Image (tube, rainbow, N blue to C red; front, side, top):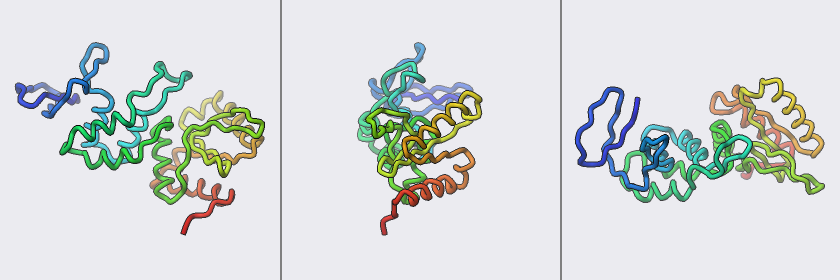
Length: 222
């Protein structure tokens, strides 16, 4: 199914498998991909606010503002900035989904590498845990830069790693073991989270992180 935006007042369009939306569309909200005109990432994000949940919209926003990594990406700039997303909200007053977009943009952060990392962060914060940093390198006591946990608490020397399906690959297993050994050598605690921990509103994941924080000396504010 394709979603097409037609400017207000334009001729009717009736095509199979095409959903037509009539709304205001500015020229700087259009770009081209393989010669096909499409809405920009920031405009697409705002349009999706009509259909996605707040958490899904945050995950999409995190992906939009994410800084690409040379080892994994064929681009060196984010798809858009947080300011670009805010500009869409400010420009399209009264648009459907706007309230959801306003709620989501407060929760979008630069640094998340996957939707799972975003959902884990949101679950942790909503459970009353401190907000973690995202993909920040560990700096050892020797001043050397080490690996970057998916989420971390430098104050408590805790790194949280989300294990996706690729972590069952033999080569990845070896790298994960090496990473765990590095955590131990640096005096950090590694918390490993998998898909099963994310079920039931990520209660198991939150419990694992909370336990690690309490063991490291964190106490929930009363």
